[in-house]
Amino acid sequence: MLRHVLRTLTKMAVTLFAIVTLVFFATRLSGDPIDFVVGQGITQEDRELLTRYYGLDASIWEQYWRFLGSFVDGQFGLSFVERRPVGEIVAERIWPSLQLLLAGISFTVLVSVPLGILAAIHRRTWIGSAIMTIAFVGYAVPNFVLAVFMVLIFAFTLNWLPVVGNSTPWHFIMPTIALSGTLIAALTRFTRNAMLDVLSQDFMRTARAKGLPEHTVILKHGFSNASITVLSVLGLQIAGLAAAGNVVVEAIFAWPGIGDLLVNAAILRDFPVLQFAVLAVAFAVIVVNGAIDIAYGYADPRIRLGSA
Amino acid sequence: MAEATFHGRTARPAGIAALRRIWREANGLQRAALCIGLALLAVAAFAPLIAPHEPTAQSLIARLRPPIGFERFKEGYLLGTDELGRDVLSRSLHGLQLTLVLAMLGASIGLVLGGGLGLLSGIAGGTVDDIVMAAVDAQIAIPFTLIALLVLAIFGSSIEVMVLVLGLYGWEQYARIVRAEVRRLMQMPFVEAARAAGATGSRIAFRHVLPNTVSPLVVQFTLAISNIVLLESTLSFLGIGVQPPTATLGSMVGIGRDYMPTAPWIVVVPAAMILLVTFTVQILGDWLRDRTDVRLIDR
Image 1 (tube, chains in turn purple, green):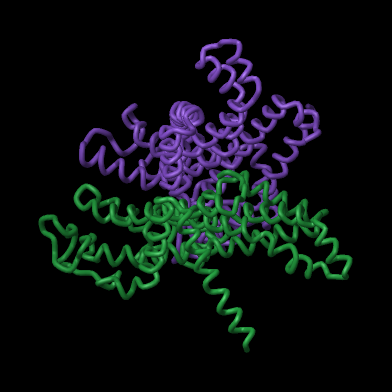
Image 2 (cartoon, helix red, strand yellow):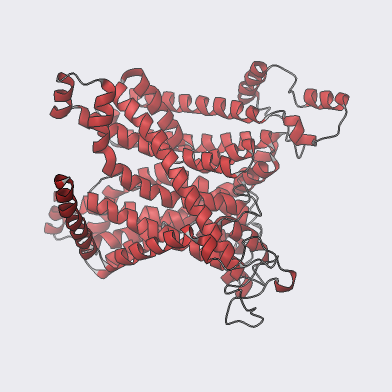
C-alpha cells in the first residue's frame, strides 16, 4: 500500500513540477510583459521603474527560482491589471467556484446515477435506449450553447431567472444545469456500463435466489459494487470536464469564480493572474486525481499490492 | 493494359456493393447523419457560392432584421441580419466553412503529432517510451481548455495560433492508441518474420505496423473532430478564439449574445448549426466505432 501511495505521490509531484516549469517559461515567450502593462509611450526611466516593480529586472533563471520559491512563501507577484497580490485575487474567487462545482456535481450525481441504473436494468426496452440516446446526444451539446438557449428562454422570454452573478439561490439554477449537461451525459453512460458489468455477476443471482426484493438486489448488491467504478470515473474524468466547463459557464454568467478570472486574465493578458490561476486549477485537478488513485488502490488489493 | 481493365472492372462493383451493404445495415439515425454530414460538407465547401451576401458586407438600413415570416423581415435576408446589417445566413455559412476547416486541420495535426509520438514510443521503448508517457500523463492531468487559454493569451488570437492550439488537442489520445497497438503488433509473428528477413526498424514501423493501426485511428479522428468543433466554438464564443470581423459559428454566438433580448436569431442560427455539426459527427463516429469494433477509452 505504502509503495502505491509513494508512487502516486511521486507521479503527482513530477507532473506538477513539469506544469509549473512549462507555464513559467511559456508565459515568458510572449516578449516583454511591460508592453502589456502600459503599452507604448512611456519614458525609459518609467519603464525601468516598472520592470523593477514587477521583479522583471532579474535574470530569467533568478525569476524562475523566485517563482518556485513563491510556492513556499505564498508571494505570487502582483496583477498587471489590478496591481494587487495575485494570491489575494485568486483566493477570493475560490469559494464561488467551489460552490458552483459542488452544485453541478451534486446535480450530476443525483440525475445520472438513477438514470444510469434505470438504463442498465431496462437495457432491452425503449426506456434504456431512450436514456442512452439522450445521454449520447447530450454529450455533443457544448456548455455555452445550453447556457445561451436557457438564458434566451428562462431569462429573456419568460423572465423567471436572473442571469448575472451569484447573489441568490435563483442564480444557481442556470449555471448548475449548464455545467451539468455534459457531465450528466458522461456519468450516465459510465454508471450504466458499470451496472451492466455487475448485473451479470454470480452474486446477483445468489441474492435473487435468496428471495431478496428486487430493489434491494439492485441497490445494495448491484449499485454498491458498481459505485467504486462510478466514483473513480467521477474523479478522473469528471474533474477535468468540470474544470473546463466551469471556465465557460462562469464566464457566461459573470460568476465571480476562478473560471471567469481565467478568461478575463487571458483577454487582458494579465500573466501573473493567468499563470497562477492555471496552476491553481491544474493543482486541484491533479490532487483530486491522485487522491482517487490512492483511494482506488486502497479499495482494490490488486493495485494496493502492486501486482497490477 | 488488359490487366488494368480487369482490375477496374471488378473493383468498381465491389465498391458499390460494399457501400450498399453499409447503407442497408445502417439505422435511420445513422442514414440521416450520413446525409446531413455530406450536405454540411458540400454547403461548407461551396459557402462562397451559396451565400447570398458577402459575410462582412454591412448595411445600415438593414440592421437587426428578423428572419423570414416575422414582422420587419427584409427581402434577401432569409435568416435576418445582425447589429451591423450583415446577413446572418451568409455569415453562418462562412462560419461553418471556417469551423470545419479548423477542425479538420486541428484533428490532422493531432493525428500526425500524437500518432508519430505513439509510434516512436511503442517501437523505441525504454527511456523514450518513459518520457512520452510522462508527457501523456501530464497532458491528461490538465484540462485542455486551460492550455488553450494560456497559449492564446501568450501568442495572441489569430487563425494560425488557433490551428496550433486545436492541433495540440487530443494528441495524447492518438499517442496512447498507437503505442498500445504497436506494442501488441510487435509481438506478432509477422513482425518477427519481417525482422528475420532483415527489414530495418523504420521499414517495420511504416510498412508493417503503422497500416495495422489505421482503423482505431480513423475512429479517434472522427470523434476528435466533434470535440475540436466544440473546443473552437467555445474559445471563439469566449472572445479568445477567432477574432472579428472573421466569423466562426462560436464567435457569432458570443457576439450575438449582447443582442439576445431583441434579436435572438443572431444567436439561434449559428448555435443550431453547431449542434447539427456535433450531433452528426458524433453519430457517425459512434457508428464507425461499432462497425470497426474498436474498443477505445470511453470519453
